[in-house]
Amino acid sequence: MELIAPLLTFDFALAVVLALAGGFMFGFAGFGGGLIMTPLLAIIYWPTEGVVIANAIPLFAAWQVLPTIRPHIRWREVGPMVIAAIIVSPIGAYFLLVGDPDVIRRVMGIVVLFAAISMLLGWTYKGPRNRLTGFLAGIVGGGMNGYVGLGGPFVSLYFLSAQASSQIQRANILFSMLLIGVLVVVPLAIGGAVGLDTIVRCVALILPYGAALWVGARLFSRTKDQTYRRVALILLMAVGVSATFL
Image (cartoon, rainbow, N blue to C red; front, top):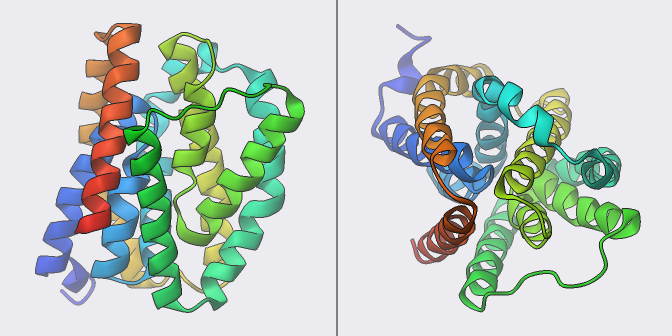
């Protein structure tokens, strides 16, 4: 009974709702799940726990979509970003461990507000696309994901700006964010941020997250490219605005 005590609370019921919303968003768009889950989990629990849960759950639940996205990953774009993330994600995780929780929550709000404003203004990256820009995007996305668990807006904006099909965009985003998630969770676990209660919550949230992810992925398979881009951007804007003002 003591083991499941963390699940018998109103806070955990709210976490289940967030997992359902985050799973659907991640399954459909390949990003945005963390935007929904991380800031609110940081309020319900603690910033480090919010980042751990929001990054760990997809690692266990997203295996079901990996076989479908693998053929569409554009490795020449993903590669430089992943290399940069390997370098900076653990650094961001270190500052999450030692940082002031109130400051971290404020930074979360700023990042979400950035996502909302960029979508409201229809901003997209229009500069050159090469190994250097991919590396720089990985530094920003990986660093911010390590620090506040919200690297998704930077990664997704970079990939959504590419002239590519929705399948390629989604595959690049989803794979990059999963790998960046690993690079965040491992240092936090080594740093002592993952206790038994956190593990119990993560395991219990895998099922609702995975079910919602499956629904989102199936809906994506029936969606046209133009519709995908429109819905993905609208969803990102909506969760950014809602998370900022909640």
